[in-house]
Figure 1 (tube, rainbow over the protein chains, first blue to last red):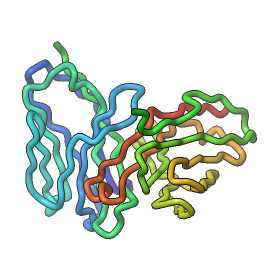
Figure 2 (cartoon, rainbow over the protein chains, first blue to last red; figure 1 turned 45 degrees about the vertical axis):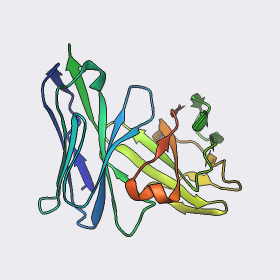
Figure 3 (cartoon, each protein chain N blue to C red; figure 1 turned 90 degrees about the vertical axis):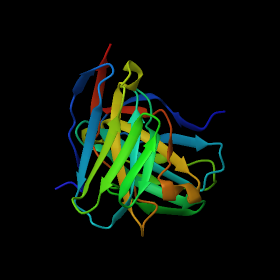
Figure 4 (tube, each protein chain N blue to C red; figure 1 turned 30 degrees about the horizontal axis):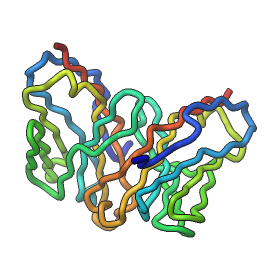
Length: 112
Length: 115
């Protein structure tokens, strides 16, 4: 079983919709949680980072962490065609800053 | 403003051949790493380095070697290429203090096909 599970999609929604992207994980030692965005044929780039449980908001993006359920989410409000990309969750334990584990990514398409 | 530069962008090898994927960063980052990305598998850590002269294994190190003789460069060597090593390879770097936030800076990737 993978340490981090993520639905690969593809997910297609109309412009303006609210998007929900999710990951589950099995390692209770994970404390730092990230979301990366990857455009086609490019390297991933960090979108948001959260430490431990709770919510974090940045513009149209909200990251949620529920450690009791080992479940993290990324919400995108007022989605735009420019949000079309693959979104990868990533996480690491407190004790090991060097080993960041990634999910397989969800491919998202926003229809104009 | 180069960031993380990977070469070559594309490479085709025959089984058993060796080659080196190059990675260079100009941001004076202490941490550098190599990932491979395969469909349905996400990014998997191959090797990483926390500074010049220091390297360690990630999740999938078999068949790959690395060295870190300078802060700027972190080459990945395939000793005897196998079809299972067909993948897209990403090099990433970070300042040590930014690892807390998980901020890795990635190159644009090197697409390798092994026939």
